[in-house]
Amino acid sequence: MPTDPAIPLPEGAKQGVNSRGSTGNFGMKPPAPDGAHSYHFQVFALDKTLDLKPGATREDLLKAMQGHVLAKGEVVGTNDHQPN
Image (cartoon, rainbow, N blue to C red; front, side):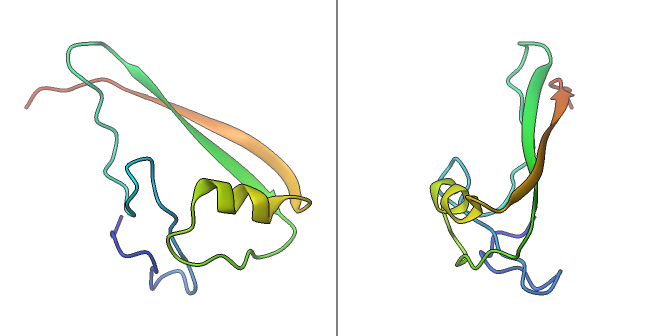
């Protein structure tokens, strides 16, 4: 995932800040040798396109989504540290 807050494709896509306070996705990096770790991703179906600026926070997103969530779900993936 590029680290630019505004992403050229798909048109108009934007990223908010992540838990590190920056943009971009650094992938799953489970600590070794703790075994498999679960990663939870929330997904939402909205009735409108949100007008948020690049670099918006999670709080900004949740506030903008209020009253517009048609459905929501969660995807859970697991990953285990693989030595090189």
